[in-house]
Image (tube, rainbow over all chains, first blue to last red; front, side):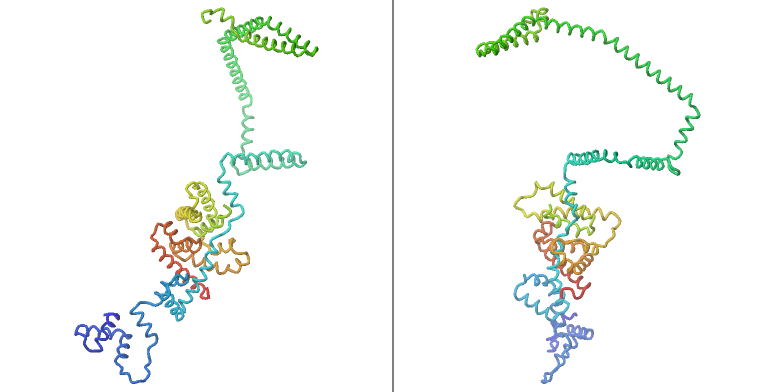
Length: 314
Length: 165
């Protein structure tokens, strides 16, 4: 039997109306539970008007056993109480509990402080380059390339000024020496390569140079032979085509002799009209020039030889 | 972007608790927001929408980080070196001790409870917005929020019994 069941049967126990089995269970519980034993002793004491020494926290102990922990109940409602969203009677009960319970009161104070503190932690300012970095990651690659090219242009403009400085030669020599030492220096992968190259050249200089000369001569012979083959295959046709074009151009020029003569005459008339300040004659001369130019173009563009050769097409 | 950068960076920092990772993820969040602008409705509050995008990316990064060896975990000290955008420098200096205390208390919390504190108390989302975000019933979110607040208050009081007095 637990304390709750015992308390349910307490009145029957005091009235001695409890059954045998229930009585035995209650007696057994009393032997094990000091709080309930103390409660029964108090209940059996005859009230004689003298003050009774109650055990510490008797009410709390009984309430805890019957209704659960007051602190747990209060803490379930503590957030709503701090937020002011708890209804009247519940808020009053929590307030009364807090008045008598130091740990729960401290917890409520902490909740109030946190409610003010936490929202201020929402924003943390990143460093000043944050926005530019994001923008750099969002712009298309063409714009990024353009920006890099701008930087390259700036470097190119800076380069002549760097070169013109008096100490540039000294710096160049220093850097060059450093590079050579870093590449071919002792204990490096390319160490000894220059010496090996020199040794190789010293060992077989004549043989290698003759072999190279023979190779170049063979290559030259192949190039000349290929060029001759190409000319023989296509040179005749190219020459004949060139002759045809030249003949055609000459014929077209001859066909415009008469028109060119008329055009020269019209230009002379226009000059005379301009000199005499005669608008009518100038207008006539201009119309004649326009007509002659049209005729000139038609004769240059027309293919009279083909038309003569193929009269059926007309 | 300048208007929300501190908010987004703050969210990323509280999830990841590492300034470099937070900076990187915050950039990704803005890029993602930029790409998803078409899906944002004009009459909608932008903050929950941005925080939803941000939370997803932070959780993705956390999953990837968990596959790696654990990082050095000194969030409280690191956080105290960051500049808060809200209060003035003087006020920030005054609250620095308390803030460090809160960071330490947050570090000891479970992931779920810390996320509740982050979304509701720090970022200021409403309970129904958190319920939508986490796809949980509103009642569950409310009770979890209360439990998280009590846990945080208990931890803070354990670190400093005079806190709030």
